[in-house]
Image (cartoon, rainbow, N blue to C red; front, side, top):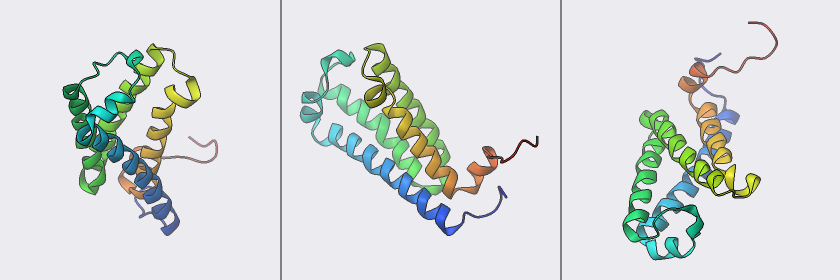
Amino acid sequence: MTDQQPTKGQLITGCILSGLVILFLLFDAGLKLVAPEVAIKYTPPSLGWPLDVPTMTMLAVLLLIPTLLYIWPRTSILGAILITGYLGGAIATHVRINSPLFSHCLFGVYLGLMLWGGLWLRDPRVRALIPLRSGAKP
């Protein structure tokens, strides 16, 4: 089953999940690149990041490159791995300053689940790497 192409429903659902994540990440990276002053204005100082244009640009590039890799099917797995690392940093940042758990700390987890879920639904290579089994058989 893992080497089969996704069903039409799996493909549509996977594309929707991936598309939502891609739109959010491109918006986030684009805002930091195009209008870093706006990103700085809405970034709480308590996060601990320097609130300056070079930092916003660096964060934007560190998010934009993996997102572009995720968009291209040939490199989507690499992009997902790199985005997962970025999201892990965001989660750690929020945990460090005691942000609200479900809205802030776990937001990166929600995005990561959508990111990998979308990829799992639309890419048989990922299903082969991460097979979901039903039943108790080994």
